[in-house]
Every structure is written in structure tokens, then in C-alpha cells.
Length: 119
Image (tube, rainbow, N blue to C red):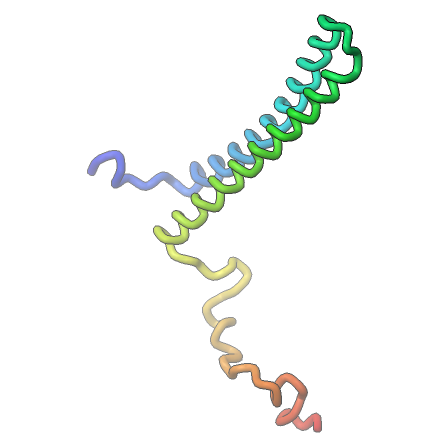
């Protein structure tokens, strides 16, 4: 059995997802802060008081949005990969018996109450 054949325990995969969410938050905050404070530093150096700080802030917001979009794309790819590998399980609140209780298709007559003594 090589390293690729071994499956990680479920806890490791859950913590990996939590870690990636924490990384997104950190990346967003650092992007905006570095843009703003870098602009402020340049303002002090060149005497252009609020302009470069505002410009740096806007570039920081742009970098944060880009990072968020990249992370969202990675998470979607990971979810699709896990679904391919493990299938799509039932939600935790459903049991297999719950899905078999009402297998009758919904028709217009059923939806309006006809056939149930309603009309």
C-alpha cells in the first residue's frame, strides 16, 4: 500500500476545510491592511497625504476579492472531487426510511388538494 492508496481519517479532512476558511480570512485582512499601510507609508514619503493610502486600500480590496474568488474555486473543485470519490450521501437528518415514505410523484391534482377529499 503506497501513500496515495491510504485514506486520511475524516477528522483530518474536516480540519483541513476549517484551516482553509481561516486562511481566507487572514488573507483578506492582510491584503487590505498591507495596501492601506503601504499607501500611507508612500504618502509620508512623497507628501501626497490621503491619495496613495486610499489607492492602496482599494488595491487591497481588489486583492482580497481575488483571493476570495480563488479560494471559492478551490473549495468547489474539492467538493466535486470528494463527491466523485465518496458519492453524494443523504443529509444527516434524513434516514433511508424517510425517503421511501412518500414516493408518489407530485402532480397538479395532488398539489391543489384534489384527490385528498379537498375538493
